[in-house]
Image: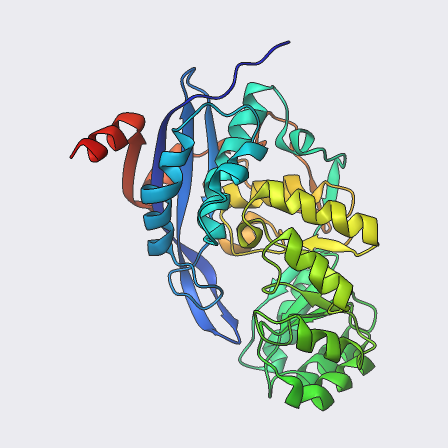
Length: 383
């Protein structure tokens, strides 16, 4: 069957604010509301694809924010999508190349095109990406807790739920002693620590103590843009370092692996600029024997669905952060919501992202909506 290229008729940006069920605390701070964009792309035949931009309201994880995402999408990226028909979603990242960085804005739009492409070709998104797993293992990410006693209770709850890996946020002064208490209480669980760049090489002694605790990995202990110091640190640690914030592209991954900066890589779709770049990184890591896993950005259901599809690729051999919708939201914006049974998600078989959009919930959480068409930009140029 011959498929016509995608001609985009309109793009809608929905700005949502959703409240987390529980406050989430990292080394950067605490928040309970997530503001973000849902991107809806419609072709001339009426097919619709959905993406989610994962930037936060403040630039604490990266330089991008919800406001900068709108600016970049509206003024630069959306016009590029109207320039010509799209034969394959891989073309989107190529078309976006003249715009530097702003990967979360790019990934949100590209993800919507991938969903649209899969639906037009009557494929689940995971098969369109080349994935082959019918179920994926997932873990849970637990923010910093006020007390160790409270943390132990949270860990126990998630261990009983069957999550395959427990990730604990750490920072200087809240690391070894806290992790040791968890390890003593749960000697056999798969456990890792996420530092979110809270340490420097002056903290080598403190980080080396973590080798005693049989951790799967320490995620991004040093600066968010570093691969040099991480290489020095990895040489002194038995525990594998996993890089997160330092990896924005395939080139970053190549350099980090060549330098020995890490033994594991966390791939976040938004951080690396989309599904196409995520695939390239996982392909290279497979070639080099570097395990990868899919990190979370407190996504709502659409972003969560994209993470599930990506995790079906071969080299995603470690449990990711894609927990159940109910872990974060009173009501998600997809139907059915993402369900986890004993640490496993069954990959949906429906075309596209595999979930229906709960339009009522989408409208309920939406605080701003704007529709863009090609004529919108023609008028803008004429003015």
